[in-house]
Length: 314
Ligand code: SAM
Image (cartoon, rainbow, N blue to C red):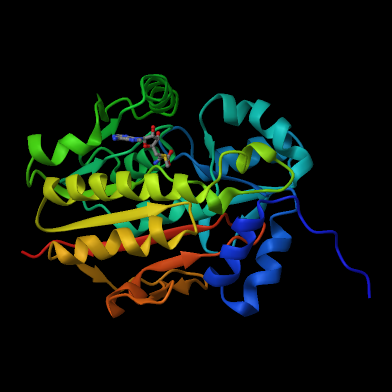
């Protein structure tokens, strides 16, 4: 039998994956981390219709495969990635390159017309832009980013893609709950994370800074941001917490804190198979409600993602 050579990923990371991922998915997930990732994009309805964008891309020779569960999202073969970034529809802001898993948190947040929505950790703005498109100007959308360079990238991205009406704040999100208590109908916290779900053996920069110490440090930061997000939310409001990490310390253990503050995890259904949140980690039993969180496992098309929808008591 031919064995694939082991991937040059941190040994400790691989050991942890054996504890985190379901046994039946472990090998295929790890194998996907050694392949070129898919290139996917979403049509930006703030700049173009689906017909306009698809026709323009097909005319430039792109081989588009529609995503099975999202009508306005497509993938192209990896060898067309560079050309896609240089294509006219991309330069004109008609499309936005984004992994399908990253399109899920705004769908789960599900903003309604007239609401005031906060994106608490927003740059470079993939999800802010998606929310802006979903809201189509019917309501208020505020976005916060603490990193100066990243803030200006967010601003430029929103302007280039027809969403300059979004209110932007160069601020530390941990203070927003204190300064804007119970202001928002919905809050998205797509938290800064270790990026484990995007680790790829072909790109050493995706795992160069990975360590368990980093995960612990991020978990602390995520809890502070989640506390601020929960305070900024109106009673009865919806908070979506997401990361592109697979680490329970950055996911279920962070959400477990929100349960202690009285928030409830709501059931969510995705249009594709996802794994329930973990209710056991390192010998500790976690609250059963955490099984309602969802884990999207990396598979070559999707990056690994964690998403959960919380409701603040009314
Ligand atoms: N939601 C973004 C998107 O889809 O394009 C990605 C967000 S990224 C995972 C997390 C962001 O949070 C980073 O841009 C990081 O600079 C920012 N961040 C980190 N600490 C923060 C804080 N205390 N307040 C606000 N933003 C913060």
